[in-house]
Image (cartoon, rainbow, N blue to C red; front, side):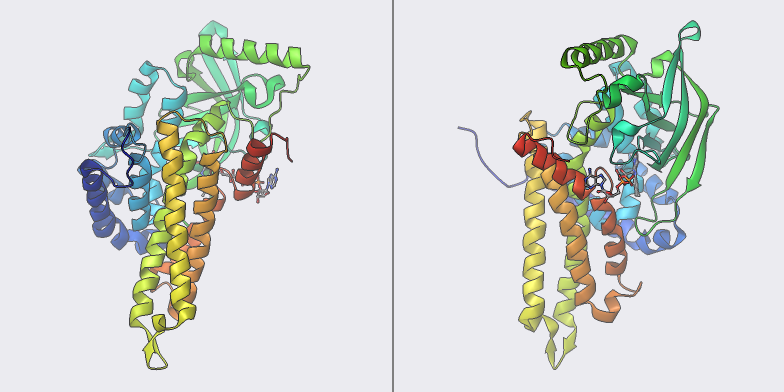
Length: 416
Ligand SMILES: Cc1cc2nc3c(=O)[nH]c(=O)nc-3n(C[C@H](O)[C@H](O)[C@H](O)COP(=O)(O)OP(=O)(O)OC[C@H]3O[C@@H](n4cnc5c(N)ncnc54)[C@H](O)[C@@H]3O)c2cc1C
């Protein structure tokens, strides 16, 4: 009978402690500065590259951890350090997962190293799916990819928005429409290689939180990429489109338009794999704020005793810690299921992201409250953590979309 344990093995504990050390010594001390500057923290990314944290090797090792806990453990520790800086360090990973999920071995070998660069010359990558009129409703995407058979090139046109590292990345992974009749089933992912003419950065967003992470529009005007930049290759795409057309014909569903609960298109495959990881980021931010609040409550005195002596404060801390542990367990379960090939029959990936992100929002709000006036100032990190936590219920599918996915999966009803 297989052994059952919640204990991390020796290797995992070592990696966790090493990451925690980097988060405490390098990321956390830089957090306030880069939040104020609202710029990509290149020197911190370079430090991470030098010690091997910002690298394909590191992510591959965590990604292929047979227990599934490698990635969530890494995310929790880095985001415990600071969410904005950590997203700058791991943002490339979202694009890399897009290539790992949809690309051929040759494409993986060619493009992922160019996404990371090397410690003396670090590079970034961006995953570009969202558009001004296609956020939650991915099927409304308009960016077109048209095949120029004579030149064996794809021509991309459209505007992407909210792209993490958009415009400053070396490699962009762009999701585009190849067959508008098929809705989200007519999407495909493309690599846009470094310095390709026609790709420009649009507006850079000034944000409420995770301000050390660059978020911008990406404009694509007559962007020509070689045929080899279609992830998965043309043959596979043609087969997939033919199957989708056949299904649409036989079901009489020519629109093929799929809501957020539908899964197997290029962007959704990437999101499915990454949702528990986003849950783990939220756990990291929540844990960081909880620790500050616990420490503060033990040292701040009012009415002649530490404020933690009041049940009103102590019970809040008890609830915060309970929710954080519950969130982590949901994240670990989803990651373990994904790695061991267990199907998400109850949308467990979405459950983990929903609960962990809502936990981060509520726990950081409670931490601000426990620190009183100090919690409301930039002298203490919980103010920043509270702003940062707001992103988790928005990106990689909002909380409403997670609920929609869970409810549809459980009921089989196409709830709107
Ligand atoms: C900082 C940041 C970084 C990001 N990074 C990336 C990135 O790297 N790549 C990328 O492609 N995208 C990225 N995104 C985009 C992100 O995934 C989208 O913002 C998100 O999917 C929501 O889309 P939207 O903003 O258009 O909101 P909308 O879809 O317009 O939603 C607005 C509101 O309506 C609700 N809503 C919508 N539809 C329904 C429904 N059917 N039922 C109930 N409620 C509904 C939503 O939950 C939300 O509350 C990023 C966003 C941010 C803010």
